[in-house]
Image (tube, rainbow, N blue to C red; front, side):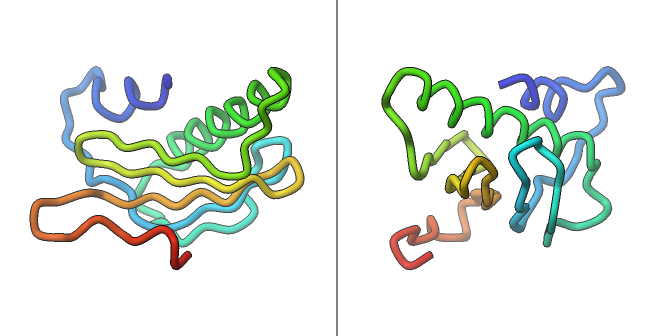
Length: 106
């Protein structure tokens, strides 16, 4: 996923806060709604959305359609649900002080 290189491997070596919130995107990857802070770069949110939609499309093309996918990185959890070609994407930073979210209640 290319957005990880942009988020963690920046040219300037700047540290960014991980995104927290939800984004909803249409089938073209355009952000419809977002609860992520406006301080977080929109281009990185678009990269995340593009990669998630591509994952759903590839699964459908392989005749293994996904309704939901969860990606767990060392410090970021991404859960996405397919919505008629678009998606709703939940972004949760993982810290040692916070328990992992219970996705079954979402």
